[in-house]
View 1: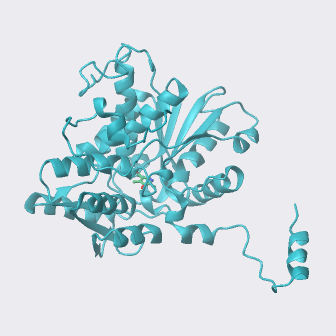
View 2 (view 1 turned 120 degrees about the vertical axis):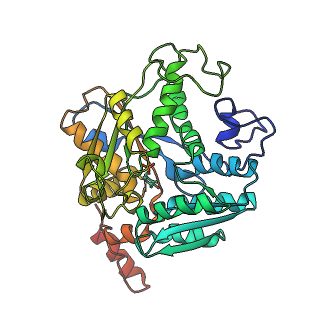
Length: 380
Ligand SMILES: *Cc1c(COP(=O)(O)O)cnc(C)c1O
């Protein structure tokens, strides 16, 4: 990168592929451009040749991929003259909405479930000065309510039913293809509302459309002028694989789930908002949905933290838990390249982490002999 060049967020970077005008005031916190980390230690133990990557979306400004969608949704809300935004949230959407509203100088109303919200996410919504409305109900109840409120009050809805959200989120696929030089063979994600899996498919499809293969969706915004036009960057698209927590798995049951439960609170959703389109993504991409038990999700979270130094929140680990199982079962064939999206940072949910940590802190007297003994007893 040249001296003096500042990264100024994904709208600036992908301006030619996003629905903004030259004079649009961009509301950004420098989101996007997250690392694609190749896993080393976990695949070595698989005895099976796969190229396994994690896209660490926890390193976005508010600690989850929601920032990619929120920079677009808030930019457009401000452009349209809106003075307030509203969302229902399991936590990360509210954190992002609160931060981007603060940046824009407008009000954020966030509707969250009573309890069942990770402490870090609540702290963010409160700290950024949003109006937090805690309902006696779950995410699905909140979603129903905010849709009604947005119809009758002067507030812009910024859940993923807002089409600008998915436009921002599709840029994660662009980044992956740019780095790998091609699309991966498989892309695995945790699925709640199924907005993110859909957004990635839009991104991959736009790139593929420009190479002349798989032309199912013309690029809506660049009209042939973007950097991918005719470049042949990504002729192929990945198979999209979505993993749900067993207690909140409407895509596995083939029907909505009324009382979803899981330790992975970010995907504790029984009535996905992108239901129809996500089935289409599965079909078009030749991918599949599967489920992971809470224990598998937590084990994968811990494995990533202990073996690779990557700390994601429980919901995020569903992508790796599922992918590792499908790799072991040979559903993902040898020689494949696989990208797993780690949707949010582990610091979001310190309670979940401490509850399953391998080691308690060792308490000793503040003396050399005691500390030395603790070290010798724990040398590996
Ligand atoms: C929002 C979220 C998800 C689910 O994404 P959807 O687009 O609702 O499928 C998964 N993990 C984390 C950490 C999230 O914040």
